[in-house]
Image 1 (cartoon, rainbow, N blue to C red):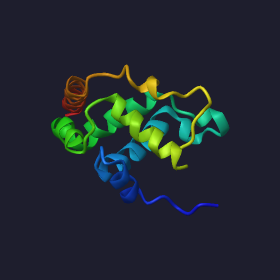
Image 2 (tube, helix red, strand yellow; image 1 turned 45 degrees about the vertical axis):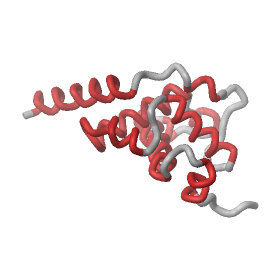
Image 3 (cartoon, rainbow, N blue to C red; image 1 turned 90 degrees about the vertical axis):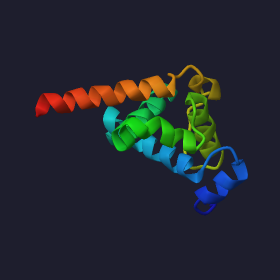
Image 4 (cartoon, one colour; image 1 turned 30 degrees about the vertical axis):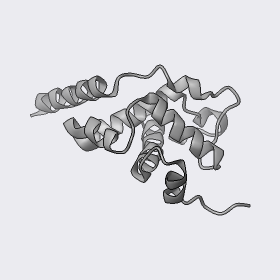
Length: 133
């Protein structure tokens, strides 16, 4: 049985994204699973689609970094949903994530524009917070 994967080494070998990007996609997966209730599911019911994973990453970025979220993601090399897919499939190939037979890298390519999506998410969060004040 192989040992744990060194994410820093994996990011260095890949060369396209900062180690923070790899770690954040993992955090985004956990966030998406929690938000969708799939963290309590078992077996194939735990599976997230590409859309759910991208949504989780963007939601977590907006929550954590606010209006700077797009800048933070870009500084790590994440500029679109395809980048999340690339990291996801790299992590799959090293046994960190698992996939369903129907999962394809192409499933990530139709995601939203990060900049406008993140601004909209932040605006929604700010308005929701103002309604509670």
